[in-house]
Picture 1 (cartoon, one colour):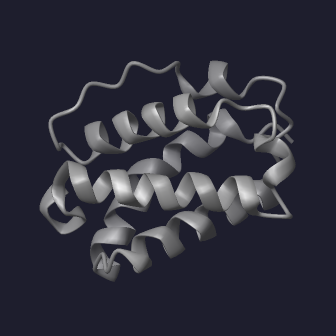
Picture 2 (cartoon, rainbow, N blue to C red):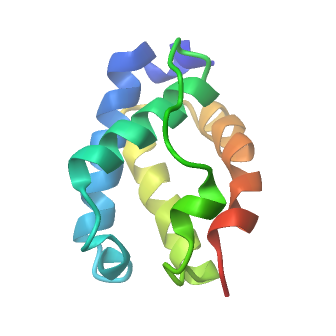
Amino acid sequence: MARHFGGQAGIRRIVDRFVAANFADPRIGEIFKNQDAVRLRRVIFEQFCFILNAGCTYTGRDMRTAHTNMGVQQADMNRLVENLQRAMAAEHIPFAAQNRFLAKLAPMRRDVVQR
């Protein structure tokens, strides 16, 4: 699946767009304001790269631990997914590949959404 994403370089571009969009988003930016953007880019890149089988190891925390006490709501998660879809579309990732990737991420929702 990594080939649809342009390998590690393409995944990195998607993550850069995605993280920037989340920080700038007026609806969810508050969640990210106290986060270290450099670290966040690194661990999201590792996670996406690992999930897409592009030759990376994920060194970040598990999703439940990473999102404890952040107060992420379902609407926040929906917006985050929209930002990811826009980042993937900007990199011309085929829609079917986007959906397959989102399906792999979907189980994380229960560990991220807190209310």
